[in-house]
Image (cartoon, rainbow, N blue to C red; front, side, top):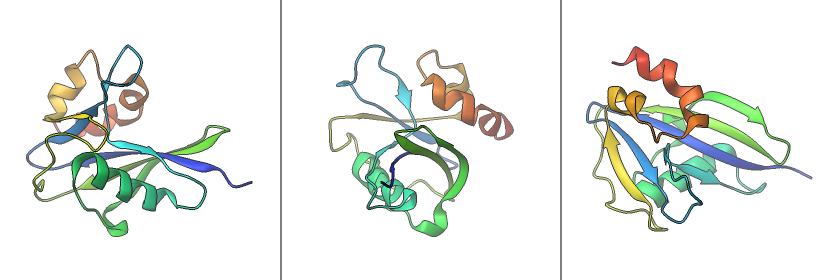
Length: 131
């Protein structure tokens, strides 16, 4: 049976990097890259495009997405994408499921105590290069 996807998207723009925080998640609640889960019927790219539109209101295309990390987690495939935007479009104040949305500098994210550790491990080298 094909596996579903979990995706996260590192969106880099001159205005900053959007992160989301879902108050409905169990404690501790972390700021994390926007993204989420898809099913086996959609590709990782389709899942990323849908999740980014739902969570922060930004419409991406497949051409915007660059895979920077992929791992088979047994129950699903985790894919982390990077997107470089010349300008961050207007983003939502709140995600479809009540997520908080914030835009942060790479320096601020690297200094955060409450940035999701799994995302930090993968994107910290990229964030360090854009300081």
